[in-house]
Length: 287
Image (cartoon, rainbow, N blue to C red; front, top):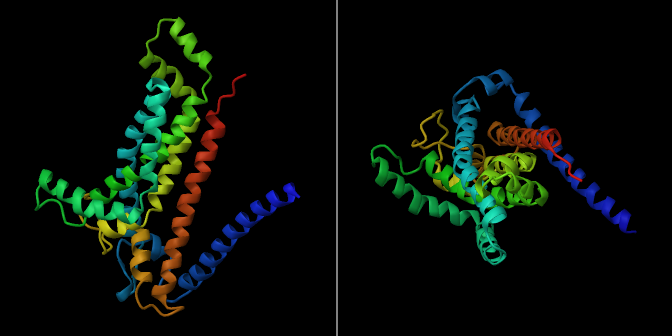
């Protein structure tokens, strides 16, 4: 019975994923089979204006990738530094206090992060770089706050990978005269590289799929730009904004949302597959 129940749980999760892909694919096919759009235009144009029949997805993709890149620039060094401290330096008492406090960040609703980006991060950026440089809605503000959001994910998974490294490696390094910092950076981190890399790629997937922060802080107009201080619109932000309007079923605008969702699904799926390959490639097994 237990084995059957566990198999049922796995089957339900797989069937749910298959159902999501089926719905996205079915509606996306209707979008691409229309006379007004083609795959060449979808992936070859840099203008997304459904009102005039222009469906180039690159403005949405570039803003999504820029937000994710800024988020990882913020989250990776901070998250890895926190993980090294908790794993190698913190006492049991400090770890028992700091780790729950850190993980509180993961429990804060993302809409709160969105308003934090608008009311705190954007004014901070405008005071540093100038009001004429930084727009009220901008990519940088959303990316920084998304990075803050995924810090607990990076630090928690990286710490688990670091703590899984056998203590004998640390003792051997100390016996050869290495300092605690040298042991952490040159021995422990390389030994846990597969887990750290997987944590980073999963965090990237989380950043790409974030919705409320970018919907509130980044902007509400697709723009093909590489300026982090410009307003733009990400893939998830566009889906939220358009789906909240009055769209009729089976219209071109309606079906375009599923095409964006399918592309977003394959982006995150690709990152997850890459993370699995990295784990298999760099995993080290100790006796």
